[in-house]
Length: 183
Image 1 (tube, rainbow, N blue to C red):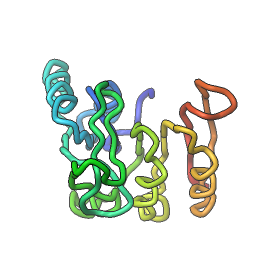
Image 2 (cartoon, rainbow, N blue to C red):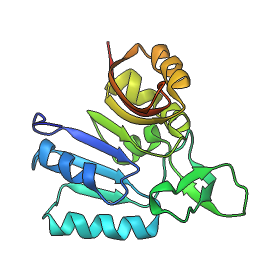
Image 3 (cartoon, rainbow, N blue to C red):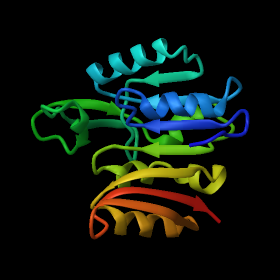
């Protein structure tokens, strides 16, 4: 990720066990801030341990997923911890979700420089809850895609964002990561 200007704010959506949060905390420096969303309790406990082991003090961990709006959403608890995700309620499990715009307001964030998402295929829904992040804050996006490239491109174009870099694990452009910036 490299060095970020002092005071940058990084939102890590789908923090898992903290690899990106730890890197971001170092990059934004002591005057910066990392807000990590990790709804799964096992992943969150390991994330908090990893932050403590690394002496990270500028990272706030919240036990919620991102979604297009605040409210209750279904929760899929996969046998593999890396594949837990929000979904339409199917088996009665539910979790309270937050939209990124409301989260930014609640935390009184004056800026958001980066939003990273790794949320197993529901990135379009979560990005729909970040319109203010696009329009007002112009956050840079680092998003893992899961066969969602076309709808993400369409959403980004509405806000004058463009994909400036991409890498794909499974051709043709099915799974991978994109970096997007507003113009």
